[in-house]
Length: 110
Image 1 (cartoon, rainbow, N blue to C red):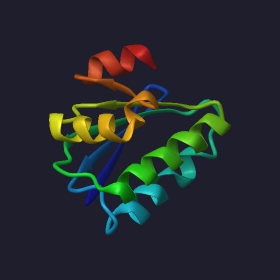
Image 2 (image 1 turned 120 degrees about the vertical axis):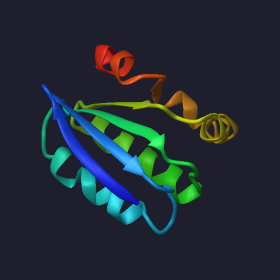
Image 3 (image 1 turned 60 degrees about the vertical axis):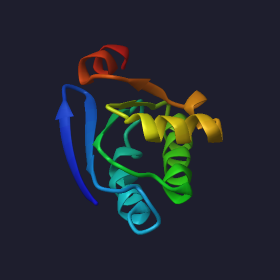
C-alpha cells in the first residue's frame, strides 16, 4: 500500500493506494503517529484507490478513529467503493465514520 499525505489548510488528507489489510495496517497506523500529537486534528482519508479491506484494516480504522477522539480530532472518509461500504455495514462500523462521496463534501464537514 502506498500512502500519500497532504495538508489542505488545517486538514490532513491521507490518500491510500492499495488494499488495507493485514500486510499494510502497520504502515497505515504509523502514518497517524505524528497526526495524533496534534490537538483537534482533522483527517480525511481518501479510499478511491482501495479495492479491498479485511478485518485487520477495519480494526486499524477503528483504532485510528478512537485515538483521534482522544485528542478531540475528527475523521471522515471519502470515495469509498460499494464493496467496502457493504463490509462496513455488515460489521456495523459505518456508524463510526462520516463517509462522503467527494473531497469537497468531506472538507466542508470537517
